[in-house]
Image (tube, rainbow, N blue to C red; front, side, top):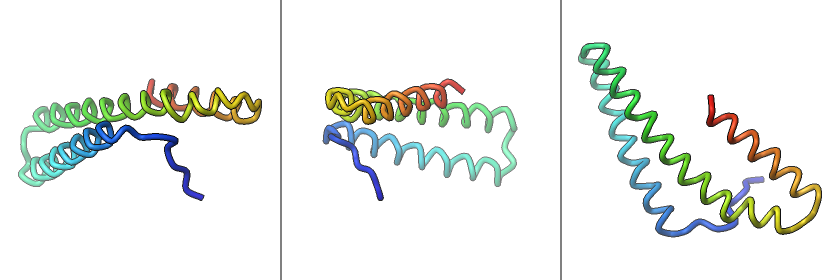
Amino acid sequence: GERHAVAVDPELKASVLTRLRRIEGQIRGLQKMVEEERYCADVITQVSSVQEALRGVSRSLLRNHLEHCAASAIRSGEPETVGAMCDELVELMFRGAR
């Protein structure tokens, strides 16, 4: 089944959605740049900007995950739950480091 966050701060949710909509606009801008055969270096610069914006969204969500979901799992003290959460966090951090 689908998993849900333990808690999402309404302000965080609104801010992440705003940022994602902005990124969506940036992606449309990129598509237009490619269609118009804009200078490659300019397109690449814009791609970097989108990647940085996405990293910012990831940071916000990871912080929420640590504060709520991970903290709750670790507080449970159930070895299976704690172990699964630790594995998940390590995986998320290494995925982010690539």
